[in-house]
Image (cartoon, rainbow, N blue to C red; front, side, top):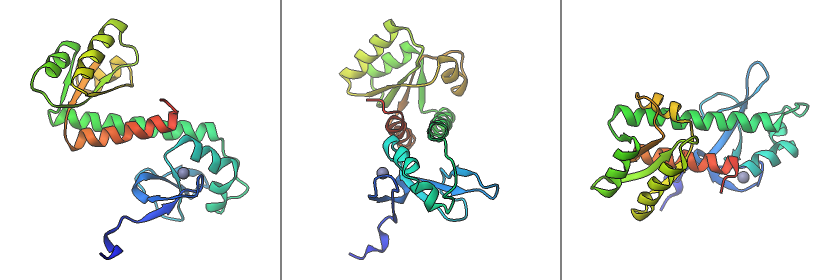
Length: 198
Ligand SMILES: [Zn+2]
């Protein structure tokens, strides 16, 4: 086998391991001399990479590897701000993907509909609960999801979920299995690694 089809790899300046480029975060220096997180990895210029992981981002900034890699040694980077920016970007990605799922009719929302789907023939990839869901409903949905071994995660407010799905407030939503759901789950994992949840 030739290595030609292998995914290109880059080294994380935080932990120094090589990873597939697509899984890393890329940083570039903008013409205005600001450090940008190049999430789509398309911006021109020298790029520096870290894992999408809180430890790696913090190490990269504290040890000035990020600054050095961008030839911006004298830069002061506020690491909390940088982490917040990355988290915001991840949330935006998840929201966009949820919006796409809505358009393609792959999203189900509302406690009853989701529980009904879990008990029925729907094949859900995951269930999303809002952060402001009432405990009673949350427990019911979690119980039903657990029986079907469907992943559950909590993110966004019910008004935001409703807005994305083109409804009123929605504290429960589920996505049918498929590429979009897989893409969202990937971003959710990255979000968790950045926020150090679990
Ligand atoms: Zn790393």
